[in-house]
Length: 214
Length: 300
Image 1 (cartoon, one colour):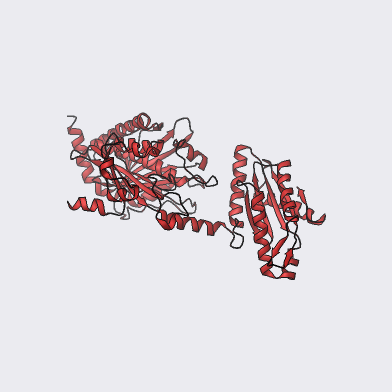
Image 2 (tube, chains in turn brown, orange):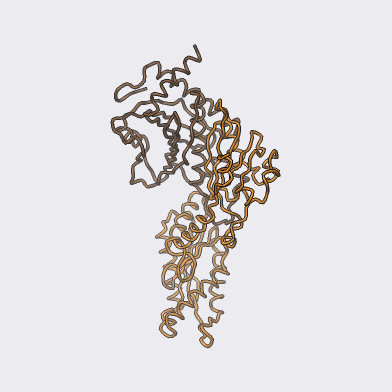
C-alpha cells in the first residue's frame, strides 16, 4: 500500500484493510458463482491512498481509452461513502451480450432492434460493484444505498474525469482489483474509491473489526 | 400511518416481497394498474400471478439483492415487460404494454440483516414514445419515411464489421430512377415527390424485413441485403426492376407516369474493402447499367 502524500492510515490499519478486502473479494467471487451463476475471478486488491489532485491522472494512466473502452460508475452512500468504477478496457458489443445469461428473457419486440448494450453494462455494474461493496460493508457492519450506474461516454477525446474529490487537498482511497470472466476471455478492472469523509468512520470500523478477533 | 398513506399515494408502484418471493405489500398504484387487490396477492408467490417474472434476470436480481444487499436499476430498454400492465389510453397504439423502469433493492431489519426486497415500478411509456419518435426522426428520410443516408452509412459500417468478424457476406444495391429530371420538368416537383414516395413503397414490399433500404440522396437509393449474394441478390434486384417497370404511377386522376430504375450491385465478400470502396463498386456498376441503356441490373 503506497501513499503519495501524508500517511492517513497506520500500518496496522492498512493490514486490516487489506485483510478485509481479501475476505470480501473472496466471498464475493464465491457467492457470485454459487448464488447467481456468474463465474468471475477477482484478484487480490491493490490498495493505495492518492491525493485528490493526482486521482484523475492516476486513473487516466491506468485506463488507456480506446473506442471499445467501457466504464460504468456507481456511487454509494452511507457511513461508507464513495464510488465504484468498472472498466472494460477493450470489449465489443457481442462480448458484452455474452457476460450475463439472457437466454430466456430477451424480449425485444422488434428483431431489427440492437442489443441494449448500455443497459446490459448497467446490470453488470449493479452486480459486480454491488457484490464487492456488499461484502465489504457487511464485514464492516454497515450498509449503503446506491445511485443508478452511469456509463461514461465512449468518446476517446475526453479523459475520465471524476465528478467528486474536487477539493485538491483531500485524499482518496483507491482499491483496484482485476477481474476475468471464466471461459469468456473478458477481463477488466474494478476500482473502488472511498471518499475522505468516510476515513474517520473507516478507521473506527477497522478497529471494531479487529476487536471482534481479539 | 403517514408512511402508509405515502406508500399508497406515490405515483410509482411499490411491491414488497419476502425471502421466498411471496408478496408482503402491494401498493395502490399496483392495484390500479394490475386490477389485482393487495388482499388477493398477500402471502402468495409473485410468480403465481406474474409467471413472466420467473426468468433468469429477475431471479438473478432477487438472489443478488438478498446475498449482497445491492440495488438493481432496470430500464425498460433491457426488459420491456416487467409487470404486463396496459399502457394509458393515449399510448395504446404505440405499445402493447406499459414501458416500465424498475428498481429492486433490500429492506433491512434493525440488526441490518435483509428481511424483504422491494420493487419500485415507474411508468416510462411517455419517455419511451418520445425516444422512439426522436430515433425515427434521426434515422428516417422526411419525404419517403424510409431510412436516411446517415442511418444507412452507420448500418453499412456495422454490417461490414459483422461480416468481417463472422466471415459472412452481403450485397449492396444502389438504385437510381432513370430520367427522373424529366418527371420533375414535365409534371412538376410535387409529382416528382409523389413518384419518390410511391417508388419506395413498391420496393419496401419486394425486399425482406431484414434488408435495409435507404434514400441516399435525390432519386438515388441504397439497399443492404444481409447474408445475400450472387443469384439471390440478382433475383431481388430483378424483382425490383420488373416491379417498377410494370407499375403505372397515377399522379392525380388523369396523370399517369411510367418510370424505370437502373441498379448496380456490389458484393462484400470478406475482401477487406472499406465502406467507401464498396459504395464505389456498386456505383460503377450502376454507371455501367445506365450506359448500357438503363432499366437493368449490373453486378460489379
